[in-house]
Image (cartoon, rainbow, N blue to C red; front, top):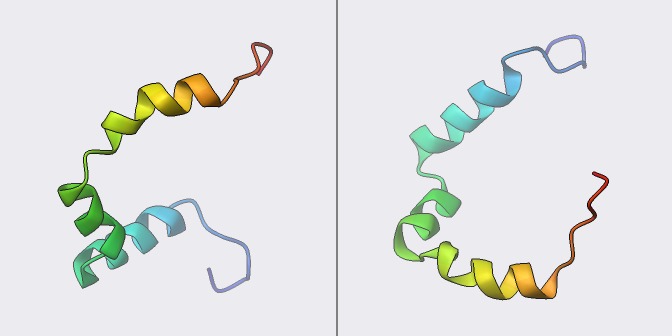
Length: 51
């Protein structure tokens, strides 16, 4: 990303760097089952049918 414009693989490389350093969100995901919140969130948040 030397030119200031993200390259094709910059996002994937950044995620790999975070994982290698011990990403806090990955650790949290391994402890908390976020799928248990899906039904409540699906009921509370409407999704547009045209998107």
